[in-house]
Length: 181
Image 1 (cartoon, rainbow, N blue to C red):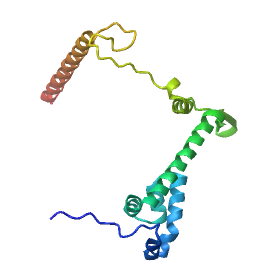
Image 2: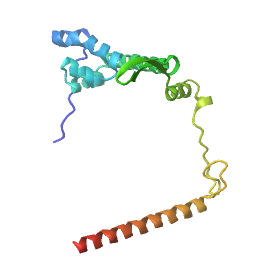
Image 3: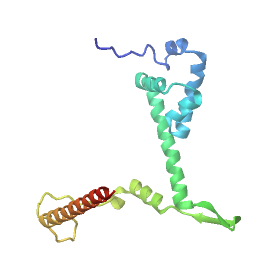
Image 4: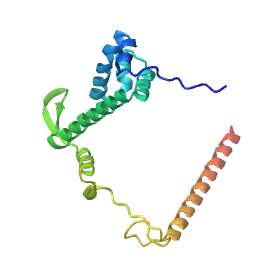
């Protein structure tokens, strides 16, 4: 007999839902959303409040208003992450410098990789990775590379054959080593 999906009896954001919910859970709802906005990690927040993760995901799935607030919290968390990435990429961060175990100063470090991601996100038309696609079987695999696909396939086959020969030789060497013992 197929089990019926458990229907959520009431959304927490309605008056009826709030009346039926325990005062403990009522007090957790805004704090759970604040935690998600701060950390971006619902599992961590559930653990912190000792609320079953599945329960919170059921609220999200079955209550449109909670789902909307959840999405807003996730967006706020993403904004915080983006601001931190921008700070590290543009303003930098202080890294301590030690000599012989003693702190002698600090160095400002910048993250070029974070800056690259920020630029790709902000101006994708200018900074995206450029990959050319072609349906022409004789087109070069790499722009500017004149090798055709047949040459590349032959090279790959050769390398695979060489690898198989080495593996067989290695297997024969191991078998001979076992015979000597």
